[in-house]
Image (tube, rainbow, N blue to C red; front, side):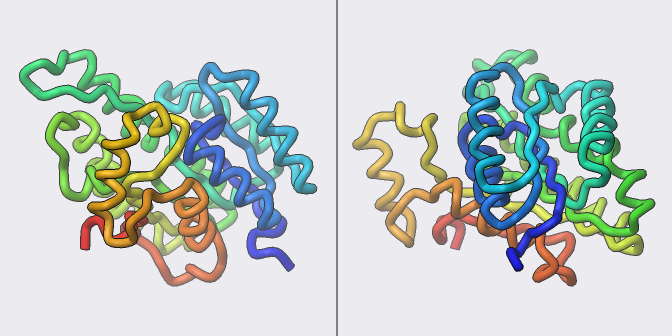
Length: 248
């Protein structure tokens, strides 16, 4: 039997990057996948087909997790389509980097709204169904930046640190109902976004990491699979750094 067989998983922001990697990894392990995308309809439809080719049920939904009402409606639709939800992975996120001196109020607020409000919105939306079934695993994707901070990323660091505080609070609130809430804090993960960066800069980052390489979306997905599975039945309120030893 596959590790995540017959589980139903929601992943926000899965049409590319880390979210896409998690979706594919979960499908290979037997999980059905409902995922959101914001504007990339083409890649989302393509991903749905790839997931279905793994023999699982999969569906793409255009929905903005940072909008409270859209999040509620999305979860309602997933429950109608899939019956129940075992795992929620809050992955949707954006960056608008700048030194504080140059950061606009809008750039601060938007990053908080997408990265932090979306976690509140989605957790709130899935709460009653998970409480009713008395089980669930919520996995929030934070960042090493949320653990240690980073110059030029005050808004992003605040949103990702907020995700950790929120998750620890939910672990305390929901543990008695067998709902687990954990955090993954990825380090430097190489995706199509980092591929656009200067190779020399990227190599410099790799050299500074103890494992001497950037992470892959699959590295993050493997950690998510552990937290989604029954292997981690006694794990809640934890932050797992998937960073190649960056914060060691």
